[in-house]
Image 1 (cartoon, rainbow, N blue to C red):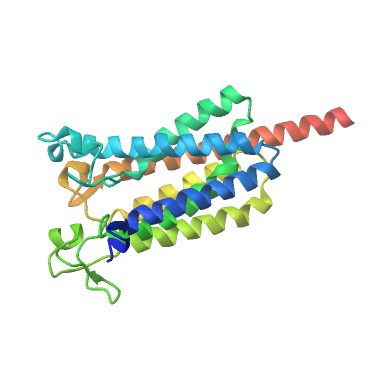
Image 2 (cartoon, one colour; image 1 turned 90 degrees about the vertical axis):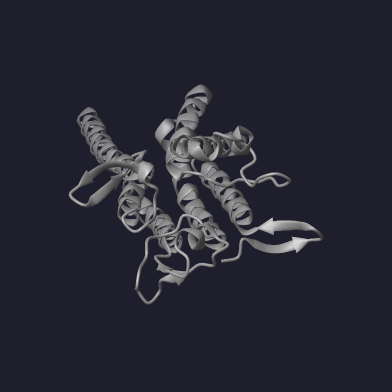
Length: 276
């Protein structure tokens, strides 16, 4: 764990902030590059990416606040200054909140600008997966978003000064941040590979939603959450809020892939009949 990577004079460069910046910059570069190939103007992709990122961060922060209001009830200003007095930055985010609000904003932006909806979302999907990789590396260096106790050979003991070490002092835990980083990179590679077989717009985006939903659902069994994130218990197994969203997202993605594939087949058949 290394929450502060280095200092420029007295200014600390936080690992999470740096990884977040890398995720945003590389994701933006990739989105503009892919958008150009898809025939979407670079300025439009730049705008939707930048504003979507801002809206997504706000959504991720607000969802965290909803589930952790006890942390802010006595100091509401800490909602916008999460590192405390005399410091500024971004911490305490729930990724699903960012994804949902970012997607809603992007939907309305594409609609207003006359950009084909599914084509635009296909362009953006790999950037989001790549961003997950870098952000989760930042989580590991920061010691947040950690796992439950584990005796596996690769389990990690975090220092007591970190969020993970404070909850589980001197205890080996799952490095769920690294698991999440790995599935982010795996999804990124999968999207680029399977896109070669794409037959209709929307394929890459909904494949991303499906893959991310499965990965997040499984990893969350190993990750530590407060009790207020539990929405259901099946025997002794808790089902978390994020897992509920994952199940719903997977179902929606599967339905949309089937519908879009069916629509493509109908159009192809009609085109063939017209040609005859």
